[in-house]
Length: 505
Image 1: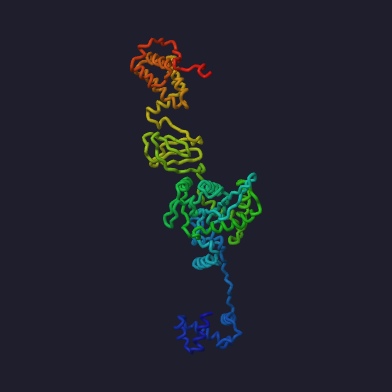
Image 2: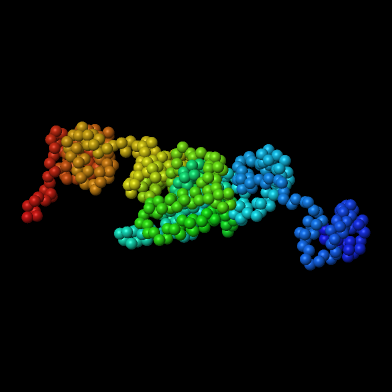
């Protein structure tokens, strides 16, 4: 219509020749002649009267033209969904479309042009290009849900975890104790189990449970979340700081969850996290089954089954187990501390820094990336878990001496030695405190012989002094050879300085 009006303006107002008009508008002279003749034959006057519309002018100049295309347009929603699948191109979709409709199909150029126009008219959330099974967007809702203790009335706030797939908008919702690291990691694990597979990328927000240091180009993922990603074989790419459009899918999902799930729960009172999650799970299934307007009535669940689910990687054989990471320095007793319990490492690493990887069941100790020790996690506070292989040879031999073994050794030497060992054990607050003293005493038999040690212990019993130092002095001074002593008879522990019961009456 613009060309029509320009031809008639130049012809009837500017009075240019047909050749001049053709050169000015860069069209053929025959085209100008044809329109001028048609205008005259239709009986129109220039300028056009007010009652003549452009549509009427077009029909008068070009009678019999059918403005309704005979081409069959493709279903652009189906085309858009298929384009998200791996390996699918516009050329392939056009060939399949042309094979179905033959001469009634659009040409490839028009096919691409129409698709581009349709894509540009869709809502903003569809402007990002997503591939099937590629991205899982993850975030927490802003609002929390109260959980009331029925006995005390205490209220705690449950955080709402939300994740959705990029292509299908398939949504997972869960209530957590909070946004702490453990809640975050276990919610991620249950989300992947709900999906039944692993996407190519995890796109979280920059919360502290996922990112130690937010950065537009090189964000620093915390060790626990990095270990989670390695376990499932999918990298983590956080959204850029202050760029909510990077995770527009989950932002939209959060809004839907707030309106269609949390809003429906506002009149209910929950006493446990489990009951809250049960209610959320029912509404989540309802949300995923509800038809979506922009997808020809397909639901999130149907679209997920068609697109995302087949493209997901398989889950690993074993689920992720929550782990904590900690750097520790090996103490002089070749132990490292975690949660007020001490675990042994090889004694050669005393003074070195090691990394602890602690799960619910195990404590793994790494040095320069290699596992050097592994223990069952203990809940006993202020105690030690020690492996004999980690100890120096002398310490390991010392550790093997149980109280029963020490008493048996003393009994073989003689009754006086056995009585002294018993007295030493009774004098200590803990049996392990007496172990060193007892072994030190019994080791004197290697230097002085069993017979002399037995006589010296008899003298110690007679004197009422049971220390190793006292007995060693007796042996060194030869007093056991001066005092007459029968090795087969125990010397009673009597002395003139020992007070009897009558002293206190």
